[in-house]
Every structure is written in structure tokens, then in C-alpha cells.
Length: 322
Image (cartoon, rainbow, N blue to C red; front, side, top):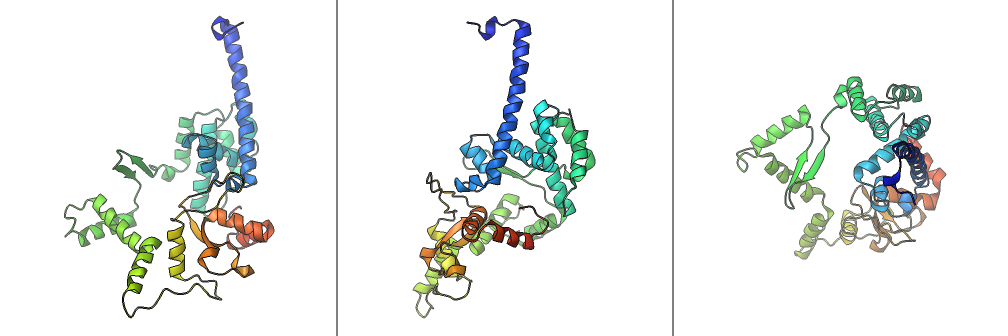
């Protein structure tokens, strides 16, 4: 039986080239499957709030590997020629990912879409380039995009390094706050300043803290009781919203019926009526739950259908693809 150690130099290289070609073919298959998972919104069905979460948690990709594949999927959808270029090795996964990220940032800057022909032209220019060369090319096209990325990197169990770019307006505000709070922070330490701001923000917006303060007020004499959840209006009383938030621990409650997996994300949470308000659903606690935006949309699609939901999205965000 021939082993890798027994192969001749020529056979070793020939077999390796064949494996690389097969690896690229499999990569294209992986990208197609990821695209289908996204098109079917299957990641939502499985209890994940994003395709990225599905790729990292369900498929086991690292964050960087998942991001590269997802960006390549989006680029392939918009510029179909990319598929053949990735398959033949003319365009690496890293370059495809960088290009798609650039297009997204550029469209935000322009506040409108980039034409397919513009995208195709840039892809052609970047054929055969390395990730580093691609980065330089993009920096030449749009130097303002080349900024340090926001990041939060754990240093120890108790400390984290936070990095972001502050514009002129934000820096002016920070300097003003340093002066106003100098009595408690004479050295103007940013960590103390942002800690204070976070505390103030949580006092104002954290539903758990609001609910606790409301219960304290109700426990005092001559105070009004908690507002009732019964209402003919779509508005859900703040006290009820806060109780739902506290009960659901500030996490999306969507559950995959097949596996029992609960989404659990804390990002972009919305209040959802299990029985829709439009169909007579009440504001009772038993009829309310927290869902992330995407799972709230999924629930609405199941009730009202894709066509009705898509038409609503198109009217509110005419330039954003669904």
C-alpha cells in the first residue's frame, strides 16, 4: 500500500494540485449551501439570529472563516462571475471578502447601491492579487475607509481593551464631559468617564432597573398601581414591557421546534405578540415575548405571508434589498 512517504516528487505535486482543485470545488459547494441556507432563512428556523451565528456555532467555523465565506456568498450573488474566479483560484476567498466589505461601506457612504458593472470592474482589477495587494488597492480608491476596526479584546478575566475611532464631534463632547465631571475624575480618565455614561444609560434604558424602580414606587403609600395590560391601542404600557423583559431575561425567546434550541441573542430585541395584535391578541404577559428583529419577522411571515411582509419592508426601505 502506497503512503505519502513513498510517493515520488512528481506524484506528490500532481496529487496535491488535484486536491487543491477538489478543495476549491468543495468550497464553491459550501458557498452554494450557505447561500441556500440564507435564502430559505433556515438559520432562523434553527434558532440562530444571524447567518454568522449559524456558521460559527452550528458549523464550527472561526469568526474570520465564517465572515470570509458569508461575504463571498453575497459577492457571488451580486456578481455571478465571481464563482468561476474563486473556483479557478483567480480570486481568493480573502480578496472576495474584502471586496464585498468595501462595497457595503461604499454604499453606506453613497447612501445608494453600486451598479453591477462597477462591481464587476473592480473584481476584474483584483484578479490574481493577494489579500495585502487588495487592501492597498481599496485604500487607494477610498482612503477614508482605511480606519482601525472597532474591537473589544479581553486582556484578563476582569479587563478588556476597547478600541474605536472617535470623530471630531464625539471628541468635543468627551472633552466637555471631562470638564463637567472633573470633581469626581480629576485626571480625566476615559475608563471612568465611560463607566459613568454606561451607568446613566442603564438607569434610563434598562427595563430591569425601570421595573425595580416602579415596584418601589408602588410599594409606597398613595402611589398608583401598575398600569393594566388591557388596551385597545397597539401601545403596550411601559410597565408591562419591562415585566416581559425581566421575565425573558433580555433574550430572544424563539425556539427551534425540531431541536429545542433557543436563540437567546440580546441584540435588536422587540416585543412580540404570540397571538398577533391584529388578530385580537392581548397585551397580557402570557401573550407577549421578546424576539430579536429577525425572528420577529420570521414569526410575522408565518402569520401574514412573505408577500405582505416584503411589501411592507419595500415601502419603508425602498433602497435596501430584502
